Image (cartoon, rainbow, N blue to C red; front, side, top):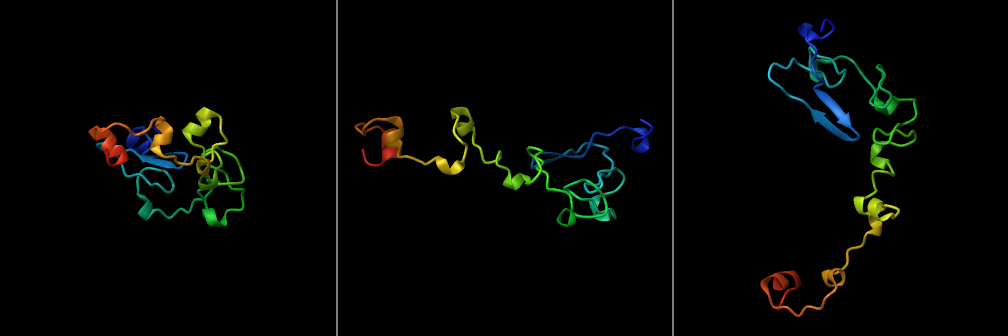
Length: 131
């Protein structure tokens, strides 16, 4: 590739999916800057200032005038750590609940499995205490 470093097209060495970040390392990989996302140098030697909210150069996230955009759901007005979709649990989504983690209260094991402790086996002893 004529536009790639050394005439080669390299895969991105840094990527993010929601709040999760990933790094790709491979043999012969050229230096990659996580700040400006270009090959040829690393972030420690990069002079560019880039906003992680709007993606423009010249300012940082804290000074950004654009509305906050969630990198998880893409909606303006909040960031991923405050995303309402982030707090939903699989159990709540599958069960049709509202999804708040606080709504899931732990109950005693006897209530969940629905039997009285009458067994003296090792497993019941381990789960419930004395046999």
